[in-house]
Structure formats: C-alpha cells, structure tokens
Length: 493
Image (cartoon, rainbow, N blue to C red; front, side, top):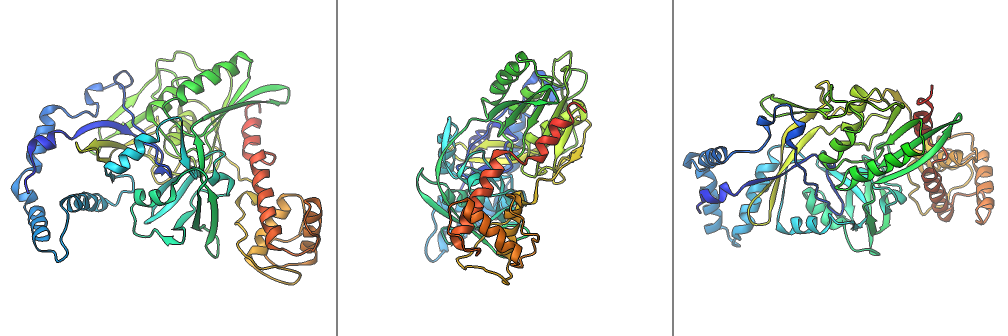
C-alpha cells in the first residue's frame, strides 16, 4: 500500500466547528469559519499554508513513521482467515487513531454519514430531536430540542442511552449509535435510559417526528410596570444570528426596558452565529472571546460596537447549555455586565475543525480551545451563574416505570416519583420518600377525579402515565419557571 503525497495535500481545512457538544440524533453538521476582521492578529488565523501542508505531508510520509502501519495492513490483508476489505481496514485504522486521543469530539465520519449530515442542514429534519455526546463511553443526552419528541417524553440532560429497540449500543461510536436512534417521521423507537440518581433504568417510547429548525422565540413580560423582552435561542444555526437581530429590533421598537436571553437546553452551534450576536452587546474596547491553540498562542476577538445597550440584560443557563451557549453566557457575564441566572452549564470549551479526506469522508479534530474575555477556560467545569436558581423538585422527577399497581402501605421508588409529581401539581401527599400513606391515597383520589380517571386512590399504570403527561405539560407551560422569574426580577432590582 502506498500513500500518495498528492492525496495528503488534498486534506483541506473546510470549517472551524464549535457546534453542539455532540451531534443531533438526526445529525446536523455545523460548519464555521473565523473572519479576519474579528482577530487582532489575523496573521495567526488557523489556515495552513501550502508550505505547511507539504511539510506535514513530508513528515507523515517518512517510512519509519508508517512502516509499522503498512506492515500491519499487509499482514491482515494477505493472511486473515476470512479476508478483509481494503476500505474497512483503512477506515478502521483512522477510527483507531482517533480513539487513542480519548477525545469524544474528535471523530471520523465516513461518506455515508457525511451525506446524512448534508441532507439535514436544511430547514428541518426527522428524528427524536435531542443532542447527544459521548461521555464515559456512553451516548449521553446533552439537551432535548424545544417541542421535540425527546422533550415531550421527558428526556433530560445527562440521561445515558443504553439500548435502542432492546439492542445494546455499548461499544458503538457516536455516529453508529445515532444512526440507530434516528429514523423517519411517524416511526417508533424505544430507548433504555440510565438517569443519574435513578435506582433502575428507564424505558422511553417515542414517535419520531419532523423537527423544524426555528431557533429564536420571543415574548414580552410586564415586570412591576416595566416591559421586559425575552429571547429564547434553542441552538445557533446559520440563520440564528439574523433572526435574533430581527427579533431584538422588534423588541427595542416596542420599547423594552430590559432583556432576558434564554439559552437553557441550548447545546451550541455555529461559532459565527454566536460571534454576530455578541457584537450587538460587547463594545469594541473589550474582547468578546479568545481562541488558544495547542502551543498556547492566543487570539482575541473584538466587535466594532461603540456603545453598549441602555437597558439591563440577564442570561438564563442550565445543565443543558453548552459550547456556543456558554460563550454567550460567560462573555455577557465578564464583558457585558449581565447577570447569569440558573444552574452551572455543561462545560464544553474546545473548538473542532473538519478535514476533508478527499473521498467524501471527514475527520473532525479538536485543534483549539475557546476562552472567556478574561482568558478563562470553562472546559469540563462549566459557566457558574451569578445567581443560582433550581427549578421545583417535580422538574427533576424520575419517570414512573412499572406495570404494577401500588396502594396504601406499599413502598417503592415509583411511589416516590409519583409523590413528587403530585406535590408539583398541587396535590399534597405530605411525603416524598416512597411510602404510600393515607395522604398519598387522598392526593391520588383527588387527581384521578380531576382528570377523568377511575377514582381508586391507587397508583395504576393508567394513572402513572396521565400523571407524567400532566407534569410535562405543566413544565412546558412555564407556570413554575423559577429561573425565568428570577432573571426577570433582577433586571429591575
């Protein structure tokens, strides 16, 4: 086998990527570039010169570097009992090299995977609507997408997916696992989930659907006689910055006196998108972010904005806020004089660059880390809010997973989950430890009567399903959103 120098020179830097922590279940590709005008030292832009590419090619082609690889390839190709395909060996070698990096964000995508990516960067896609990453060798939920089947089913950040349709995905790489989870609109998929804090696994059944890529939502609230605007960003896609600016202009024309930017559950996206958004708020005298390479060389990025906004701003984050969302939060915290409200964010502070292999396949490789305006890294630590606020307990309640019926004097974790949910819905069981007391029976009777169920005072499978639906609907209604309430409150206090 011979690696041609011309082939290696074809390794082209196609995009710098700081997208979501992993990839959407339906696999959306995020490609971005850093523009020269944003860097104070754009002679250090991360683009290899032809000379550097040729030097890299010369280094790779040294016989002593590749001889062992060539020998292994030849031995396997010529002698393996059942035979081995050349393409399989080559791709296996690439995947093996990347796995040795122990970096979940450096991955290989074959031609088929790339074709799927390219199909799904349009206005919508089909799947369950969640972002995942590989954590501790397991496919892990970063955040469900707003109004998606994943959100409606109650999937949460840090849920780990163990099985898909009763088939274990242990040992699969991220993209192979994703290919089993994704599927056509209307099709069913069953996931076995391990949730932190749960004593047993959870089975979740979902109907795949079309997931529109609308990423910006707005509303206004009256707070003590003052008008506050709220802009929710669900991810940072190609059109997000333009949509954000459009909605921000509308809110300002309406005369808002304060602004909340909500990036809870936002797994990230395109770097230019967040850069453009930050240029609306961070003035030219302060960098809005920094990029650092493996040698410690840093570039600072500035806007051309002369004057800051004349109204207060607060940022909402939670455990599902990652990557570009964290850039927004920490930049506004350090350079935009904004309060950051909620819970500590995910902690993804590296930058990937995609490298075309010339045949439709791609390597996504970690090359840099991004830093806050003050030069701090949040990688694997997250952004700390200036004001920590937890949601009510029922927001975090584990699903009730049983076909059994529970009644007075029983004790079980499923009963504990039901008690937390009942309390959150206004039916007080007076305990949440899993013991089925008389107050729990009374609370269930009241709930069953109010929701058209047979009044038995027992926790049946039907009651459990209805209870969970009620909780999800209440969470999505925003009635008990303590974090948003606090973010609005601090604008004017």
